[in-house]
Length: 76
Image (cartoon, rainbow, N blue to C red):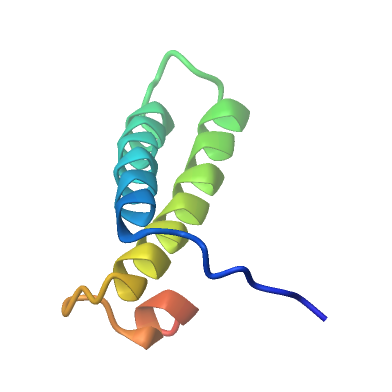
């Protein structure tokens, strides 16, 4: 069974969200970079979509009223 420590602070969660959002923007930009191969751009897009899910989850945990459980679960 998974054991959670519940030791994360709101500041740690917010800091992680900021880092994820920066990386999200970087990956999105790279996915449109025509100097990269299609395979490389696809790699960046897959990472972008994963980070987008992480962003939704962190925003939901922090109580963002714009993020629904459906968005977190990918049902939007």
